Amino acid sequence: MVKILLTGKFVRAVDEKRRIAIPKSIRDTLKSSNNSVLYIAPGTDVSLAIYTEEAFTRMADRLAAAPPTARDVRAFSRLFYAQASRVELDRMGRIRVPSELAESAELGKEAVMLGVGDHLELWNSERWATYEREQQAKYDEIAERALGGEGGISQ
Image (cartoon, rainbow, N blue to C red; front, side, top):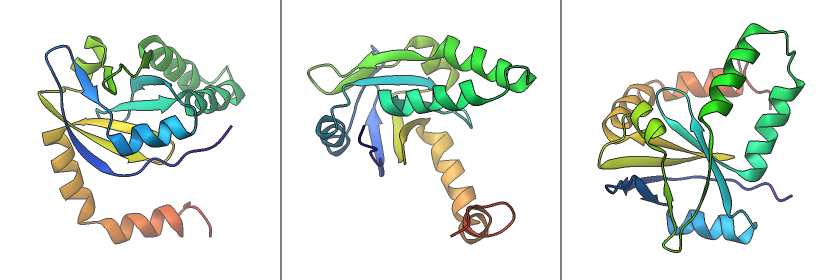
């Protein structure tokens, strides 16, 4: 398995059938690593997460390794898997977002797709603009906590 790194921000149209084109650069990355199957699931902060089969399997492995008696693990697993959906790119490089997931993320006619390391996120464009503006103002603080201090990743 080749671990891929997904990056970038892309404004995407959402058509009447809830189809969204995966950007060519992302499609090329997926194709080069033989990732034609994707999974779309509820994300955090009212977004959707789009995983390659490899990344989805890693998520499943992490959940399987967690204690099954932990209430949050059971609840998250039920909600996550019940709503997750296997999707494939059509010949135009689009995926169809299931209606239940599109509604939960409040997707309109335009969405923002983000590369977030091992997965993509799909956001309502207005919600993303607000989130980005609020978080960007605190970028240095967030980076310090995430990468160096207060329980972040050590270098």
